[in-house]
View (cartoon, rainbow, N blue to C red):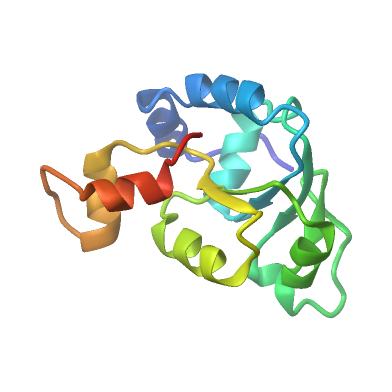
Length: 153
C-alpha cells in the first residue's frame, strides 16, 4: 500500500470529526464481531490515516470480492469476505465503509439476519445524507431515514 491518499477524503473525515465517531464505536462495539463493507478508495484512504485496530474486525467485504476466482485472501490486512462468508461468520455488526452508504445499508438490511446490525462507519451530517439520497441539497431529512442509518451507534 502506498502512502498517497486523496486529501479531500481526509479533510472530509476531519470536518465530520470521524476521530470522535471512531472512539465512540470502539467503546460501543467492544468485543463485537465486525465486518467492514466497502473496500474502495475512500476506505483505503481512511485506513492510511485512522487506526481501526481497536475494533474487532473479522473481515472486509466488497462487491468486487464476490465473484473473484483467484482471490487473494486478504485486503489491507483484513480477511476478504464474500456475501456467504458474512452469513457464515455471523458478525454482530456490518459497518459500511463507503462515502455513500444509504443504498448499501438498505440492500444489506434486506439480505442479512435481523441479528446483524448494519450501520455506516462514518456518521454524516443530515445535509450530506440528503444529498446522497436525493442528489441535491435540503434542509431536513426524514426522522425515519436518520433513525434507520443511526439507530444507536
